[in-house]
Length: 406
Image (cartoon, rainbow, N blue to C red; front, side, top):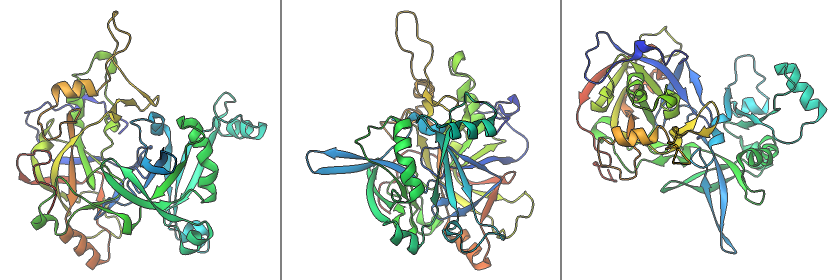
């Protein structure tokens, strides 16, 4: 996505484009609302791409003298979460099978600035890595992807309920994993969470996936009800660079160009006019990349269920970790939040969600038949950069129109 601002991706609404629709980039976000990982290919599973939104941070909110409630945190209230870098480490053929992280199927590594007063050793490490003594030292935390029964028992890892928007989610409470435990006080400091308020990291498991309860895909297409981890609503999100470019030119000049990654899609496409993806109801992905092994010889199909109703998160500038506004007129103290103000004005294209700050991007659900065929082949259902998209069905979308039960 380094060239995402190139004008070659401009394709205004209604224009005709010769050539295929291609996957430009693939992203996963292992920790909800933290930094992304760009991939050459991703493994498609029932709840979306493997390792996407499988962790979430939550804080405890005390109500009265005894009651408390745990709720997820995000860039809505903690914009610096956008600056937490995430990486995945997965075992390879030369890994020690007895290593605890190998036994756990790998780990996610989160790195953020350490605001605690650095020791001379910390400053020396920073200098050796960055050659700059003025740089703020970094702190890294390692969390196992699949804690083993031994790790669960040793560190007293237990399931915890916590809220994500309207629903009650569940996950393994990782607060006692040594690396996580050491990081939480530092993370509270950088996120400006009060010392007295508890913070933890939750891990989604196959048993804690949430059944989708709104904007439902037809069962005749997807087979069984959609499920997802810690995404807001659906397993996958797709967006178009031409759509982002079309929104970008509507912004005040000081807010241009618009970084597409603010919209946190899993799949970014090119080769289609702006907003064209909003007419899709179903599409398939044709393999055009090199022959990854073991890649199933299956053409994955996805049902498109609704537009993505946006919130204030895309207002966070990914370079600074701060909410962005336009320049206010002289008689006002504050500017208007961007790009949400522009999106509300120009991209409130339906009224399905009264709380939406405009719409951009589409939610998608993988179909069971393809997943089962890949399983029969004992191969992965991979989607890769440069693959082509073929639209199978088109139609009209209205957020919430499919009800809340299958």
